[in-house]
Amino acid sequence: MLIAVRARRVIPLAGEGPSRDPRDLFSPPRVLDDHVVVIRGIFLDGTGQAVVAGGTCAAPDSADAPYDPVGAARVLSGLRGGIIEAVEPMDAFRRRTGVPLADLGEVTLMPGVVNCHAHLELSHLAGRTVLGGGFVPWVKSLLPLAGAETPPDVRAAALAEAARQLVACHTAHVGDITAVAPAAVRRAMQAASIGCSHFAEVFGYRFTTRDGEPAAPADTAALWPRAMAELASDLAVDDFPPSGPTISPGPAPAPGAPFPIHPDAALAGHALYSTHPVALAAARRWCERNHRVFSMHLAEHPDEVEFLTTGRGALADLLAVRVLPPGFAAPGMRPVPYAAELGLLDEGTLAVHCVQLDAADIRLLAESGAHVCLCPRSNAAINVGTAPARALAEAGAPLCLGTDSLASNHDLDLWNEARALRDLPAGHDLPPAALLRLLTVDGAAALGRGDIGAIVPGRRARLALLPQDFSQALGITP
Ligand SMILES: [Zn+2]
Image (cartoon, rainbow, N blue to C red; front, side):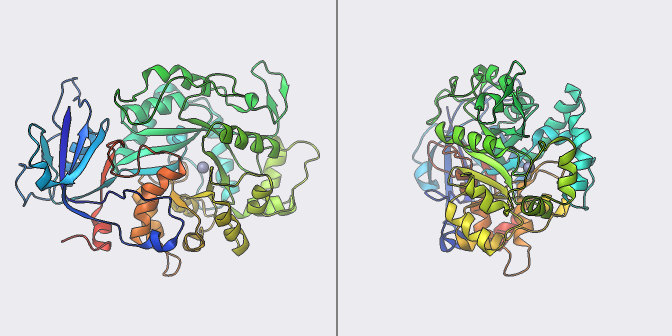
């Protein structure tokens, strides 16, 4: 069935992203006045009954519909499972017959936001870690908590709250780092109609086969966290709409993998300091062969720079206890050139944080084409510095945003990441027009998702309302 939603303004961001040219990135977005988005799908309420929409805001022809973001958000969440059929002016829509219309009123409709970096399986640790003292005290407080057994009901409740936060800010899709509970994360995201890319994290210097035998770090079968096997069994219940766009679900036993790998799963490296360089390169190659995005934390904190360049410091002391192999020698290089030397940086890579950069690092990153995921509030909460967002954008590095986990952030509202970058001192900040693209088309490109990020026929109907502060800043509030 078809359903239509009308908004006074629509920002489709059609044909955009990823933005490499700052002139395009900073330019005002195209705004369509009084348009209708027609959506195809089967829309059910909580009782399994077909519904027109989550709650109609106003009669179709009332041009003076009151601003009702709560009602409008309710309508949008009822449509999340659908596919966009058409985007057309209200006048053209009037010639259609029999398609129910929900008028959202005085709102600006845009694509749902794409959160490119989270650790949803850490959601139950909200408020329990040491913040403000730098990376090493934070990770020391995290490790015993993350390593402890978590009762399934505790995890499920925390994931439900995380999903509620993601829905509240109109999140279309999450790039989630995982090692222990990908299936629980996927269930929570499916219940909220949020898409999820699962990045299975490779960590450490020693690897074993599924039988517990020692394995070489280049053996990709040994790199997959055991918990990822659970995701394969979820394949049958995935929420691909029967008439979906270009996505073919189906099990995809990929070369070098020990079990069928979910189409939304990929390998990710933890970081240059914590993970064998051969394992990082092998994970990167697996992603390239299988057309998946490779993600890793990069240049997040000063301890990382000190450790990689000198082999010393607080991080060295921490890693020496249980991570580093005997005889480990630091590469003696800064993070970005070291990552480049290992072959880890190109258009298929999502480099997360990128806080500790000098001018040469910025140039090298931009030239590599790697997508850079900024997590400004996590960086501020742990106190590791501020990423040079403006300089990266001006150098042509494709950027996107992530909240990181609730163990290092106050909430999962991606608009708050955008506000953090908007509110940096002049000359270091990013303008609202650029942030709008980071939140949507550029985030979708960073995760390799062609099914979200713009309001275009064939894409998923995961839509968002432009918050009023951004609407005012962009000059599109009447
Ligand atoms: Zn992270």
